[in-house]
Length: 250
Image 1: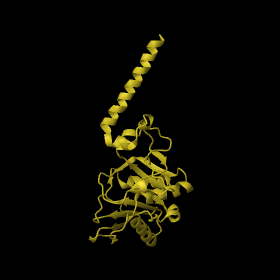
Image 2: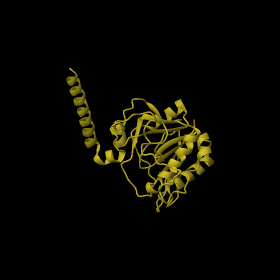
Image 3: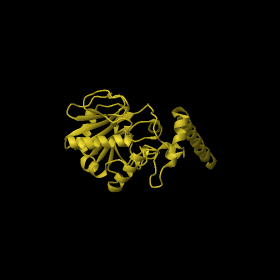
Image 4: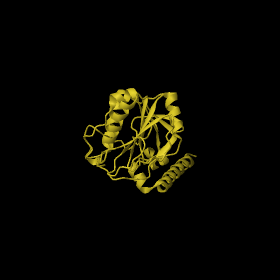
């Protein structure tokens, strides 16, 4: 199975080890170009423009079974060979690791190794050749408004063709503690695209915040500790109500 990692970077440096059996292509988007192996310069490109150019060049290089798109600022907590082995085993149309942010820590209780999801964060995403050929390129028409819309629009098109055929490998975790400036005005999103802020949750998963009808962004702003305390408090109150009701029935 032939794989290629398509990476967007500001400095040209890769902070994780690419398996020697796989190819890599690196796009540098900053004004200054740092010469590096397998890299090219595309200054001031948007996220979607960069992804499209990486894909265009990769197609011309070889016939790859999977294109693995990665942002250079993600933190990987697994060996990439483990991800490749899962691709080889299941050969999904699309696959991602688990983007383990505060919302997941607080709300997710999945115990499965794999979940089928609709929306994914495209910071790290593998897409099979046949699907990539049909779905690419990313739209760039919303780049002035919100860069997230490019990935959301592709998720919508993917789901229309292959509902719930995106694998999320829950034991392989990534995170991104950095924040860069780019357009993200999701309040002006077009009517035909709806950004899902619960995009990392499995389709049938029940999370504790939903049970308490807590808003995701409120949870994150309050912080994990405060929310956990709130959840425990509500649980205790609920327990006390049940105990009180039993006593009254006696």
